[in-house]
Image 1 (tube, helix red, strand yellow):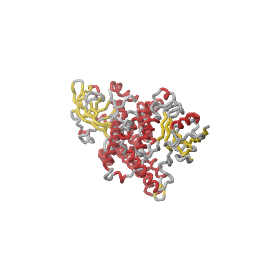
Image 2: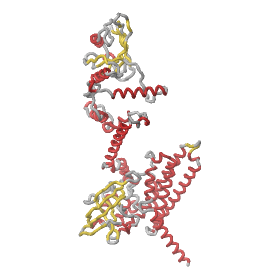
Image 3: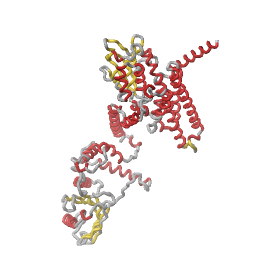
Image 4: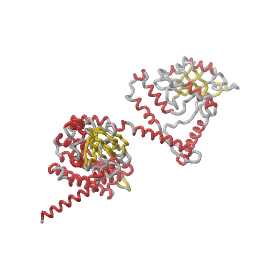
Length: 626
């Protein structure tokens, strides 16, 4: 004689949720005058509602019974909530309604504001699963944490009430309520991530064909369901809260610091990203490989200058085409001055892209712009050389297999090949560039050489030939650096113009302000000047050789670094604070442009060389006229 009206999710069969057995169970369990208010009435009406918690584990039961109170008067019906396990196969430990009932009953007994739990049924025969019933508490549920439509005064009252409720919850003595065994203390999120990850390995879960790598991504996915908090900074540092604020911040700092430290010292920090390796394969298959080396590519320095400019537009493009420093300079050294054995062992793997190399010249204890200050020593010992000293700013050292190593011997400089795995070679630390480790380019290391024994056959061209080799190496290398700087400046100017066209200040677009318009014009002039000067140096290198083109190469080395710094700086200024962040490449670009004014010799050394060569040229012309 039941009349049942149900509003349920479509996937639930209402007949499996409530039936005559359930009604009879309620009658048996709850008598007239009990806290539930059920009675043995001849007609009943039960309605289901999915308000509130829209899941298949909880329904609101509005029970309309012709109830009689203790005086025999008719009373209205009551609303109750039934909480049950969902049907079907479940994960281990999921939907433990018995646990929920125990916790809720204990909290209610302590006066905590939760609905009163009425009964728990472990008999799955009644409705198919375990369940419990509680009082239905009317209230509002805010799905949008911004609380739209709520006045400021009411919002304040809600926040205060929420804070007071949480404070009351945390003040409850679990031992008094008999809940000591419920919960494992710290590490909740870690346990959740581990538990959910273990579930992915259950046989019947695997058959669901879940997203690949879900187990790896799961901990990070938990972050998606966190809402931005509302912070009240003023109260966090009062006399009552300051101690706990400091403790929580210290804990957070330590967690973040430990994570970054672990990542920084991981060998994976210096591994080339897989996408770069894939692009290398495609570039090599297309014949776009080792284009910097005229003997291999057939290109002149002038031809390659245009390619170098294009690769300069992207920070990782040189790696894709095996045209990255310092490998290019080292390959040129081995190609021009290496023995056949050295070419076989080192040059060929470098040309294939199988290994990396570095160039160690700068020393931490001396002014390395003056090469005669070099302190690292090379001593002959039978069929070996013994190397002792210290180097830093060894580009690419974090990933290289061998190094080209200039050192001092008997008043002259020599260059020798040193494998990185030789005993006595000690990597001290990775150096930072403007606070960044520059891992995208292999990083820079400080390194010590403690009596490193290297076969005498590893010396390049012979003892005392290091300066000669360096001049042959640095000419084309400086040319490539300068053209890449032109490409970098083009990208910075492009970003500047895009930003100036989009952003508005003081009633007009940024480019409509005269100062910004002048920056754009000056940047274009500087780029064109440097490009033409560099192309002129490339032509001189092709037609007159490295020695004759020395002045032009020194000129572009000064001009390119200064130009790139100026253009990138203007672009950063137009971007404002965003230009300093990693949201844009400008900060990284500036570090490269600024370091170019020191790499391969500081501007001041080149300016002195240019002045000396210019004076000699002027004197020659004057004597010729006389």
